[in-house]
Length: 281
Length: 326
Image (cartoon, rainbow over all chains, first blue to last red; front, top):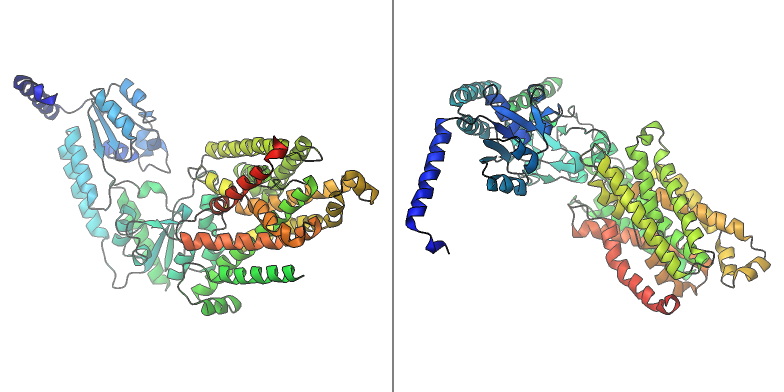
């Protein structure tokens, strides 16, 4: 079937594509809708006033979003194709983990959807900001933010001669290693990660037994969620208390699940934790 | 008595094996020494705070389920009566989930086992009311299906309504059961209720023996049937409720164990009671060792393994009783 299409049509279609592409470059999108917590925050940071129409519901949750205050003034969406389409966006920002059916549906309806992969290291953050800046036609703002980010990160980086060993310990005995944003934040704060010793650079289940036998110098616990679940029992297991190592105050998701400049706050807080460990010794 | 000795030895061996099964590569002797003498090492901590409660709970949960299964089967004179299959465990899980999600557990430490016990009690009463004194297979199984399905659905509903994003993942735990990373706190929480339940169920022996001759004969032999029923209901609810509150609903233990041991005790319900208690402990210990050997890092649920063993046996029993059901 494809071979039957006349060449003139193909040329016409290509020309149309090139024209819309050129138009997109020439004129930044006017109605931007974000359906992913991380693209929400990048867009809130970089968009021109009025350019961003709606963000996902999580963006307003102070426990998940570092920019919940800025999100209050915007309409929120539940990330469904129907409600997003009704907002008449000319650009939709989504994450790799956004429901694939939603992304495909929106594209079928002729809406431009840009998908962002989650950041795996602090180095990914300037790249994300540059891409978001280009998409929104806000390259200047993005460049300014990137320069500030790099300067702030450089100021925080003081690798100690001996790195204390820390464990990231989340609900359901989950941990993260070097190949993750949280692991990279831990590294920049001057810690060694016991997950890497256990061969869990990508992250995975670090059974309580294994955690205790690794005997880390500090346990950095994940956040406490509202309500209760048995999956969170591991954070309060008596054996963890009996281990007698300092446990950080639970860190909330907002600082380090998204590749935004706010990840620097997590670096700074963990660095302070390390310094307090060193003076306490 | 030879059987009793053999079962005790089996339980002791499996208990020791459970203690030395885990992720730590330490040799068995060193692990057991770290358990006996607290030398302040992380290994000692692992043995005392993680492995020991896990092995103890396997014994306690297994004994509760085996004993309850044998008692229910003796009373109803039906080999299909099992706490998991007829919905008692499922109802207990619902009780536990309700106590956790409503925040009752924060108001009083005993709220968790008591709530599980309460729901288990309701399920036992409902089963006995629906199945009647003689426990016909069809009514028993149908009633069990209804209670299990309802309890499972309500458990899922409550957990899905929770604001906690991980509560929904707990559904698997409550419906399938696991002993991973429990602590001594759970042992002390469950033990009093289980001990009470065991005492009540163990007292049923003579009555259940007499009941094999029929209700009239049993009454003629001086068995007070309402008292017997009351002890059974309270005993099963207390032991299964407490077991489920700390370990989730583990099915098929009370079906497989009495079935395997019945020929060895000459079919006497009184002897089957203690034998099933010991056998249940051995079975859950073995299953809990197996889940750790098969998938050390994944927390494979006990109910999965028990269903793989128990479901074929259940089919076999249904096949054998199909004449009665037809």
